[in-house]
Length: 618
Ligand code: PEP
Ligand code: MG
Image (cartoon, rainbow, N blue to C red; front, side):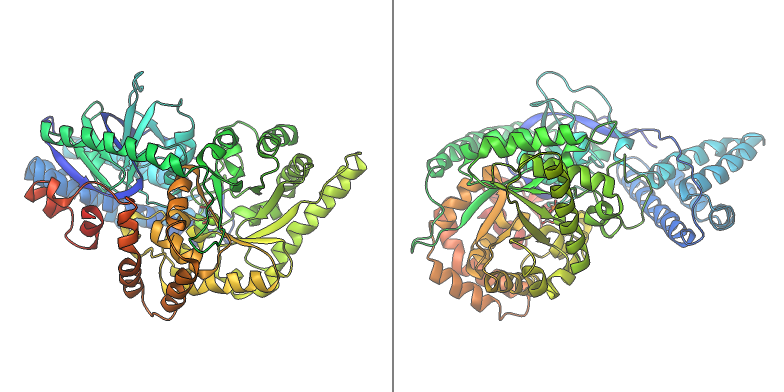
């Protein structure tokens, strides 16, 4: 790899505004570390999957290398960039590709190990030769490391290059997972500027709940930065400036001040009711990831917890949490907030929340793989331990339990059966139990289609729009490259929400939205108008949401949402909503403060002149 540019050149990057706020600080780079090769035999049926995984891995590495070649060509020299051409040629060599595929198919090795075997023998052959071939061994080693990281990819492959100093730093790098972010001491991570990911990646959700400004999907930022470079991170507008000039620094110092004041001003909303101008009450709950957050939610004006992502309790440990540990953690939340309701979601591991203790096998499509309720119904030992801990914690009567990723009635019935069995066993242990409400998350299109049957069997519904959008539109929620296709206001999504609301109300049960969409001002109003009873979001979005809800008329919101349901594409829905609501939102001061004019002409060319700039310009 060519040396990174040593010049401290000012450079601006645009990504996705994943968590609001502004930071001016030094950066620390997250790098991929050398990984141990996992080695296991696969079943005959699993070979096609592993071959597919291997091919996709090679394609990914080729993309990374082509990117590096282009950057080197632009910023270093043509000669230095040629090394990457030879790497690409090696990755196309049938001797290598077919060799690995036959090791997977015939010997049934997992993709990573098959690649390791083939490459080790090639490297050895090259090293034992003379002249040019011997020199090429180093190229093979580079490719070996890069590809293996991809085929063995997991969160533990990434680590900080240097320790963060006392005053904290902004983390930059290709990727970071929620597990890694959770492991840092409070106050050490001032911001995230990450090449991959998107607004609904779980690390972004965690960043918002920890109030850490973040920009995701920055492409090749980490190739242009070194640890300890100064940067400005603008999580509100999705902008990162590395090696900023004095002008940038002064401008953002002012922004930080305005932002702090605006946050303080929002606290005047805290104790007001989330009620529309004509008296409709919309319950506003908090989403939490760590039980320690429970103590803070009321200070942001929440009326309870609408989603506790219990899987975060399982991360970063050497063993699964015991029933006692879990009961203590859940009881802390439930008791602390009593009599406010607390909805705890059962373990939703998998996807971008891999639990290394359980999700050991590499899957080629983890979001649609062995995860969530599927995993729990297969690993009943894990599920029953959690269920007993939950029931034990629920004796005060304010606990609700909800099951994620329900795709059919069978899963829901099985989960409820396990709940009943656990209750019976706990009663036999001498515990006197209180009724716990049971609910289903609606985040898969099949659940929407059979929603009437689901609604008959539960006490409440909660729409997980993060996943519902991903699965309805077939757009990976954490893939920054296709983020523009991830459209919460797609008519298919809105009509699905409407169906769920109607089915819930027909059965007389409440329906909540707990995906990120709930906290986006335009979507909030749209959801209120669609008849959603409750919204659940990061606690510090609640005050802003109260402000929005208090500014509108329910009947008017109903009429706007009803009209929108007749539109056939997201573009017209968005323009219509902006026209109807933007004046309202602007006058509330709920918009960003940076204007396009704040930047130089070349910067402005970089910030694409489209709808995005309107958002930036306000
Ligand atoms: C969702 O899918 O909308 C949701 C709330 O759950 P998660 O983001 O944890 O998948
Ligand atoms: Mg989900």
